[in-house]
Length: 320
Length: 259
Image (tube, rainbow over all chains, first blue to last red; front, side):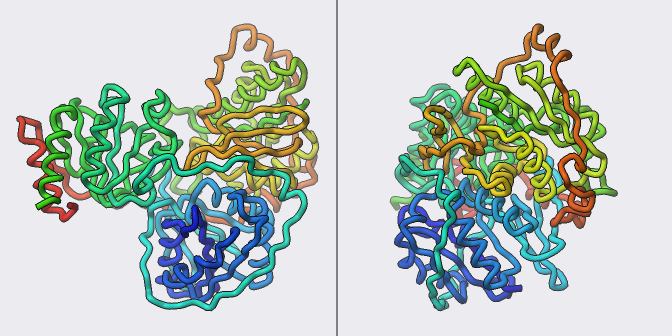
């Protein structure tokens, strides 16, 4: 099963989620190639090679500079057909969801999305997808090659294998209609520190913080823990915190090692965005808050009392 | 300006969703409702029409005959007419099969703008817009948090992981709107009454020159093997704050080697 992993880049770095998918693909034991599509991305090839790719294919062209899906579809479709890749994996993001879905159409291929695991069973690739608000796991497959898959963000950790890859440039030919959507202004990171997709620790705030200024409680604790700050949809909608930090059904899906929820009731829409986290600690004054049903440590109490003390204790411990 | 809004029917949020253990399909015998994410796309289409003072809003739905209720809601909200691709053979269609049907129906309408909601509330996929755009070979912009149309172009703020991009594409194009783009209206009594007089067109796949083996499970490139339980979480601990909760949390994090 020759496998291709699409490695997304952002601000001169391969995206962590893509490298995690690449590491997983390498563990599945197949011959794995990675593809980079962008402008000035050739220099990322070595790092990609260290994460399990035997070959790194590089489409480096100014026409691929903006993170727009359609030019990438042209490049990938040609590559997949000419090299005969029968499995193509993507770490899910706003960009890759569009790329993978358009490729399905272009190649008359099957796409399974939101996968949280992949395994090779008697030579057949099987994906696992949570459904119905993650209450059920559906095992999915593909009837034919190429098999396309989007992996839920945060599912697989990148692992360096120490190997080095053969690097090869691939042709970039883009159709006219694929270049009609143009980027006028590209977003840049709104926050400092690790992004919530990359952070090992996330401190998330909800309405229970009381007012926007109280997000400093979450920020201070996150800083002490070396983590990132996330927010619920309710507070993002209310304008307390930027959308880029929203976790949940209409925001991002995260799976840090530690997720600390401050004043979050934990509605199902929030749960689906964070329940794969390693350890979940929730602080909420309402003992009946749904979040306690899926927390590893539930603390019934006032975030305004507990969090400043906790932040101070973490600082002392880390400082000592 | 003709705007085509692709909508879908999903199980009503108040009905418990289940997957049929025999067919592995979502049980659609429960009451259905118009996918809430799609109401944002309808709303945006209506705003474009109202803003320019002219135009037509057409809702397109692929689904069983009973999904006509969802289309009536689209009409009550203000869509001018609906196109319903209704056939039993469509059940079990995956992304690829669904794309073929919607793309063929879209080409038949040849609209100036095709709008999608950002995802289905049942499948949580945000994939149909890009797949259809590729098939009809039109520019695509997804995750639109705002939309402006002028001089035959669409200018969109796209929400990404990193903030907002600004992307422009000439019409006709395909845009998937985020649910942050607007606050959908409720159907008015006048809208509900007026809906009955509007045109509801029902199509079969042969009207779209699609054969039965291209849709349904047979026309799908993916399949479902089994249903399982998600892995259970470990034992959970609960404490009440008596002034020492911060210390207890610190101890817990230390035990778990999370510091």
